[in-house]
Length: 265
Image (cartoon, rainbow, N blue to C red):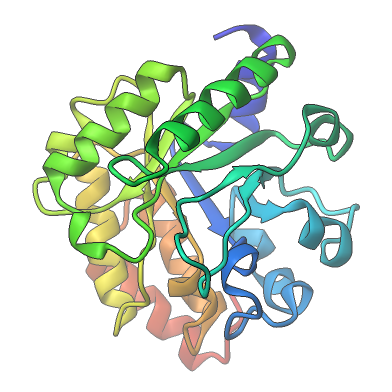
C-alpha cells in the first residue's frame, strides 16, 4: 500500500480497528425511519465514530463541511427496493467527484451469485482502477439484496475472497456462524455489516464482539445505532467495545448508564 493510501486508511481506522457509521440507506430505501433528516441524526453521534459511510447527495445537503470525521463515499446505486433487482447497480460517482468531496475512501456493492454478478464485479474492478492512481482505498460491500439466506460462511467467504482478489482494500460483509472461515480466507481487512435491526443492543454487541474475536477489524453499521431508542448510548457502547476492548456485557452496562443519564456521554 503506497503512502497516500496508507495515510487515508489511517484516517478512518484507529490502532487497526474501526467504527464506520453507515447512513447510505436512502440510496435504495428512500426516507428510512430515523434517517428522514440525516443531519439531525448524525450530529450527536459524530464524537463516537471513525468515519461516515454516506452518499454524495446527503454529504452535500446534510453534513457540515467543517466536521472533522472522515468520509467513505458510497459510489454505487441505480436500483430501488421496489425495483426488479437490487443487484442491478452501476457506479454513480466519478473519481473527480470523489477527490472534490475529499473522501478518505469509497465503497461499492458487489452481488456475487446474482444475475448481475459480472456487472457488479466489473464495477468494482473499474472503480479500483480509477482510485489506485490517487491512492484512494476501496471497500467492497458483499451485498445479498433481499436474499438474506445467503448469509452463511461458505457464501460470504467466496464473495469476500473474490473482492479481495480483484484488488479491494477492504471488504464489508455480514457476520455469520463460523465467521472465522470468512475472515481467515480473506487477505484484506474485513469489516462487519450491521444487517437487519436487532431486537436489543446487547445482540448487536454480541455479534460485533464475536466478529472481532474471529478476525474482523470493526463494523460498518447504521440502523442498529440510529434506530435504537438511545442512539448516543448505542454508539458509545459500540465505540468502547471496538476501541477499549469492553466485553458485550460491559458495553451494555455502559449503554444502560448513558441511557439512564439521559443520553450524555
